[in-house]
Length: 138
Image (cartoon, rainbow, N blue to C red):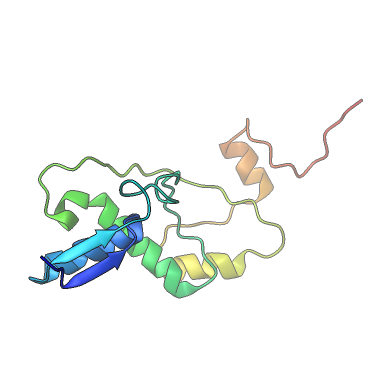
């Protein structure tokens, strides 16, 4: 048997492409990988962090919509039971200089984001060092 579509790589990108083609058509799809099995490259080594902070608005939107799919994974895949789950956590990006462009890009894509000043960060997370003040080594 010869496949109609050959996908090179069976990490998250290749597997997703193969799945979406199969889901939307009657084409026979085969995903090949140089590893011994799927996700043996960078996908398998991933910490599975799903973030939306990128420098291009298109990538921010892509990541944001990806998170929406992850939150409704069973609905997205059509599987009643999945072997994965999405756990929502927050992130604090500690940036120097102006963050307005980043904030505008995130908010413009519908991502929940806010700017925290060092005092705000200290109030919310007293045990977190923001590394703004030098350590006293005496």
